[in-house]
Image 1 (tube, rainbow, N blue to C red):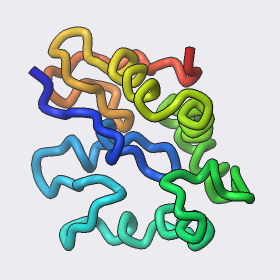
Image 2 (cartoon, rainbow, N blue to C red; image 1 turned 90 degrees about the vertical axis):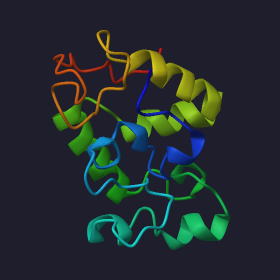
Image 3 (tube, one colour; image 1 turned 180 degrees about the vertical axis):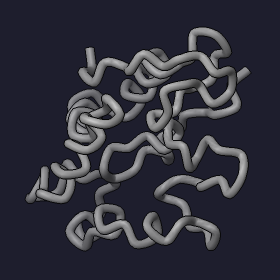
Length: 144
């Protein structure tokens, strides 16, 4: 049985799947995800410039790919850091969502990110499954 479930509301405007984030998966001081308000959320999450982007808000979009500046420099820097450190591309996530829809993205994530031992989803920020300790062989950053 999965401790973490993947839902569309857990995919942040930048393309991060919050269900795979350490802040969301940890037991103490659990973050509810980028789109949720919570007084206990870390300050850097509350003040995130991508989440609080006025252009995305003005367009009424839930995702950065609808912005006329997509991908902006801020998103490109975040994407580079995540590709380098965690083997995940925010921009590829967003492009996949734009081309295939959020449901297909979540279906793919469920397959790509599931721990082969315990069935929970492996956090992108750790090399081991938080639930059973299985080593995470970084998921392919391309969406096939």
